[in-house]
Image (cartoon, rainbow, N blue to C red; front, side):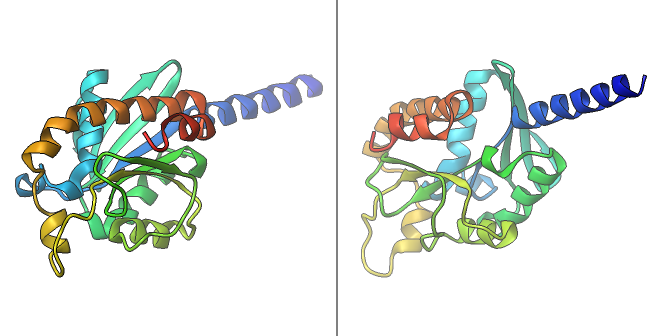
Length: 208
């Protein structure tokens, strides 16, 4: 009987650990409100909207953000669009990681990047905030730079002193035309990250 209880306890622990490892938090960064919806700074939201549409799930407003849940081949994905505004994104990320008991290695943060040409993709397992206030707050709240981030290039085609206007500006006609294909690729990247792992996803999508 004693041996059975030990076996049951260890098996239960194993099942719980396995369940945890099958859960992912995918975070798209952006600012809430209609006036921001089609801006370059909101590409994180746009990628998650494209993903949710393909998986036929909808977002519901919950604590610190809009949440959608979906499952892909036995993996559970929590999609989060923080409603704290960009500069305070870390609070929402930490809350949902903790609430859903999701390991840090199963976190993916999607953000815009001025240092990459439009539509370029860069997937990394760690790094500095690069001057991005959303990433800076996440780093501050998580107390680490070691978390996965998916940087979507928006280019730096702005004049001196015009950075804020540029990132909070809407996509131009040429960008809008190309965005659909880039969003499709972004959705595939997220699925690769979840189903194949960060290393395969990086080798497959970085530079594309």
